[in-house]
Length: 290
Image (cartoon, rainbow, N blue to C red):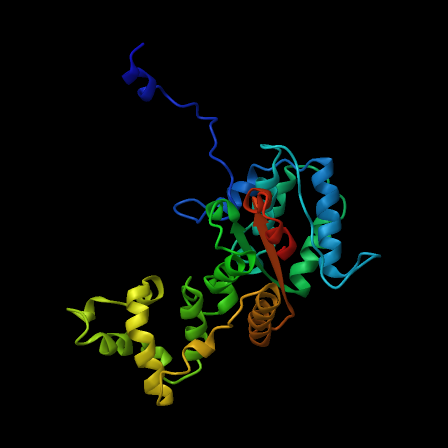
């Protein structure tokens, strides 16, 4: 057998790529696939029972909120379960789906789980924020707070902004302020005007480019804030000086409250973090932050 034969060998149709909670839907709905291919074990059923009960406030030892740490060997299904939760806890996505629970149960009687799960979405609008920490492994300058806020800011569901806010924290905080002004709907036109004389053909750029590229944001944001306030000095004041856990939680609560004000039901956030142990490694400060 030649080396060429190795690469041309047919891959088994049973082969499945790793399940990740941050996998974006392309031509496939990865949330639905995760639910369809998941087998609910006895341990998973116990976990979901407690998870759903706490969301509804029906647990006897109910605290203000709840958190869980899932642990197990590689390949034991932790990421798969988180991906299932990403779908089961997304109220807006579920409204566009049919027979999600029957796909999960696969003919099994899961007790009162379905009724409890249905009650959650009848009573609340739930928004999941999903983060795969594996992509940040080895980035020592990154903190949990920064990474979670990045996921929150880029979530269209949580920010209420089409396409979400910028993944750059200072740009995202600027956008959060700027959208309260009358200039926000014409932000692309204002950005192009700010770029005139700085770069060639500013008409080629959209606001998405300002969100993504630091050089463009540095050129545009001071001009835009000065146009609105008369000075560019307040730009740095829009971003918290220290993105610590308290600031991160406060920011999440701001976003949650804004969505709740627009909703006919209370809004709950479910934060799903995958590959936590790999991200922490031996960094005790990260463990403390978590």
